[in-house]
Length: 495
Image 1: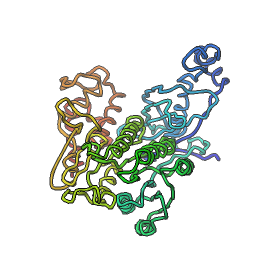
Image 2 (image 1 turned 30 degrees about the vertical axis):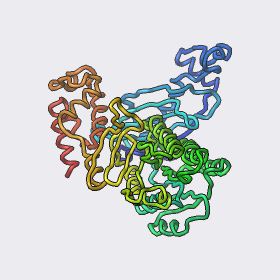
Image 3 (image 1 turned 120 degrees about the vertical axis):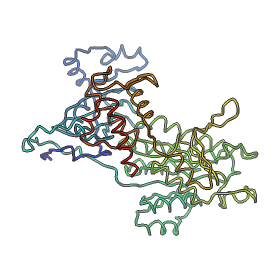
Image 4 (image 1 turned 180 degrees about the horizontal axis):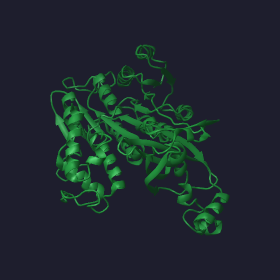
């Protein structure tokens, strides 16, 4: 189908994305070789490639990256495009004669200059092959009547639907998480081992969301495989909340199968669709027992530690591509699951408190790091597992108080101040921390030209959670004015 497409800057918003597939052949290389002059045998000589670590010829990176030009020129934004800058990273070899998936997403927009910042990736299954950043201007120098007709089969998408898979929904924490997410507008897929939790399904539907119930025993490989097959066939699940776990004193094999192995398979089944949208969240409900090393809980702790490590490894691997991995590690929770293991006089969280923290993490209200340690009177954000030589735990920030709400507010206070702006600008231009940039500005500091100024403003928007107006680009020609404008925008954001 052909349609006239004339997308202006106001047609776009952060979060818009496109996705498609491409397959490269030997004939494509021949055409590329003729145009580029690149005749490297690694790209076409099977005998030569067989003696390399790749074993087969691989697609040249610039041939594999050529669809990026079509993304800007025909999709985001289309015929009005002008690519201002690009960066490209080859993360893994691109094979011939194989479908390669591409996703390009608008990370942010800058009113000044009508500019789109795009992150584009090429991937195969759950492996990202190419990672690129594009800065594209939406030109305003074209008469709309001259907009070309084009094939609209590659549609601009947006993942507006919030849908989460909650494992262990029949348990106290899983049920509380389901109700909290439903109250916040999330549609749900609820996994449980036995019969459908009818009361829970009814409660969640009362909030006006869609609720599906899936029976699967996560200790059984065949059930997990069947669940994952169903998950691969859909693209609408944006989050996983993994609460399922056998009893605390179950055998290690059972504990590991449900906590770690099942989570790993479920994550791997959903990551390709999350990469397509460059959006997703894998959240594991761990345990602070990993920090305390409670006597007699060794198998439980081992399983929770393995799953925690896996979840945070996902964050390291895919965080740049919009997929977040988070561990919420609560202390004692007042549930039937822990009743016979919890000391009678121990302070304990309510399942609803854990659920609210889960929801906060899914909504992006995170502190420092992706490991959240939750106790009845403390909320801490940090790293998992590290201890310094003096025995201090690897928690980057800690805040105690009378309740979790106080801790969250203190831990997520906005960053402000001239020193922070100076540090961000130094880091952006690769200057040493503390470098005096007082006299720096456009064409007065190495690398700071009008093009890089676009990129700098986008960078500051993302890091400081502020928005610049269309006139701010002209006002911020040097550090003094930049500091003033940032202060104005931060004050505006706080109102």
